[in-house]
Each structure stands twice: as C-alpha cells, then as structure tokens.
Length: 336
Image 1 (cartoon, helix red, strand yellow):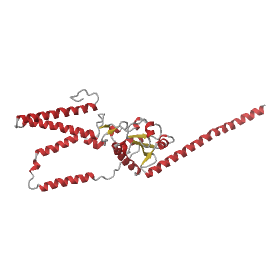
Image 2 (cartoon, rainbow, N blue to C red; image 1 turned 90 degrees about the horizontal axis):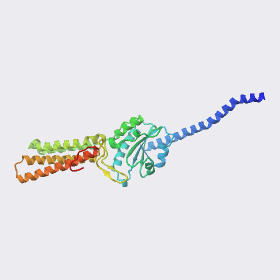
Image 3 (cartoon, rainbow, N blue to C red; image 1 turned 135 degrees about the vertical axis):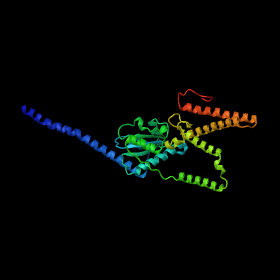
Image 4 (cartoon, helix red, strand yellow; image 1 turned 30 degrees about the horizontal axis):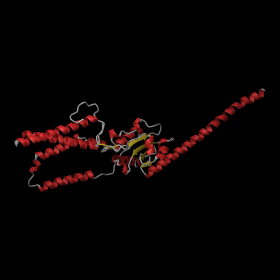
C-alpha cells in the first residue's frame, strides 16, 4: 500500500507536466494560425495597395479585412456614393481630395503596412451602410488596429471640410502617422493671372493716349466693393477649409445650400450671402442717389422706394439665414 502511494506521489509531477503540455499545445497552434491569418491579410492589403492607393471594398472584404480580427494595421474608409445615378457632386469632390491624400501616402518614403486607405461605395456595399447605421455620404472613418472606433474616429466633414490637408491632420491625431500632402501641379491660377495681366496691359496700350479712366472713382469703388463682397461672404474660409458646394441627403435627395451650424458653411452659401450683400448695397446706393440728386421729384421718389424695398427685403432674408444658423437667436424681420 505504501509503495502504491509512493508511485502516485512520484507520478503527480509527471502528470501535471503532461496536462500542462496538453493545454499549451492547442493554444500554441491557435496562436500560430492567428499569426498566419494576420500575415495573409497584411500581404493581401499590401498587394492591393501596390495596384491602387485606395482599395475598393464590398461588404465581404470590409468585414474580413477591416472589421474582423486579427488586425495590426489601421484603416481609413471613405463611405461614398460615386455612381452617376446618385448625383452626389460632393462625393466626387471628396473623392478627388481623398485620392490626393492616399497617393501622397502611397508614394512617400514613410509608407508602411500600418495604414491603408479604402473606399466603400453604397452601390457595392449597401449592407455595410446598414450595419453602421449610416445614412449620409461621403463619410470618413478610422478603424484602429486595436479596439472599436470611437466618436473621434469619424471625421467631422461638416465643420472641417474634406481638404487633403485637413484629412491628413485628422489621421495624424488618430494614428500618429504623418502624411505630407503632395498635390499634382495646377497651372490654372498662373494661366488666369497671365491672362489678366495681358488683358490689363492690352487695354492700357490701346488707351495709352487717354488714361483718364484710371482716375474714375466709380470704377475703383466697384472694384473695392467686389473685394469686400468676396471677403465678407466667406470665400477665404472656403479656400482654407475646402467645404463641399452643397449637401444632398441620400435618403430623400433633398439638397441643402445653407449649413445648419454656425461652425461651418457650404460654398453655395457663400454665393448666396455675396448676392444678398450686393443687393443690400445696391439699395443703399439708390437711397443715397434719391437723397442727393436734383432731378424730377417723382423719379427720385420711385428710386427711393426701390432702394428701400431692396434693403428691407434682402436684409430680412440675410437675418433669417443668420437666425437659422445661430439657433436660439431671438430676432427676425419680415422673414422667419
């Protein structure tokens, strides 16, 4: 009996080691399988990226390479609707900026397998839009290498715009990957400036014997007003932020030309504000003309009424736009 007990106690360490080996063998095999799967996914993403800077994905590819583990790389996804029947002009503009950014990363010396750019089109991955409860396009999202996307991993397109530089800054905040944006050369500005200089030079040459028009106060006043209208309507903000021209709701097709927030605007909104300011200014000019001219009283009265109507109506319209953007603003005039 004592010998049997001794054998049991002697074999206990051996049995413990045996069971530990049994437990470790499946775990090691699973880890190896996980590493092989990760390597296959990374190799496949690198192969696709070598062909195209932006990898197109459908629902199956999205779930396998973006959502499903294992994954040690970050993915930037643009959800869009580029098919012509969708009539999403903003999507095409955002796609151009996205391509510039992806090409800048693909052909930079810092390019690695830690970050990939992909796109999911609504007509190729409608199930992905439904899965993410997404009802607008374009939308940019960052899917981190570990964990689930947070609120900050969705790019604030409405407030910041979709310029490549703004996207690169957002990516740097989310991934610590610095991307220097390289844009293809654009000579349209240089050509336009050369044409303008040529036009002015030709005009001065043709009128070289009579340059009194240079001292025309009305002409200089009109030029100054054009600059003021452009600046006060937000054209410089558009140039810096690169907002979309307008926004089309993919659900009902409704197009919005006025942004609902005071922190952003559309390009079309700038044009509307410019025209409203111009109309108000025209009204003020007519009022001044009616007050200072010495012509027929009836004609001056008509000019005064037209000027007053322009100022009242278009200022009321301008105030209503201001009120719609600054929620809670209590004042309105004629138009709410």
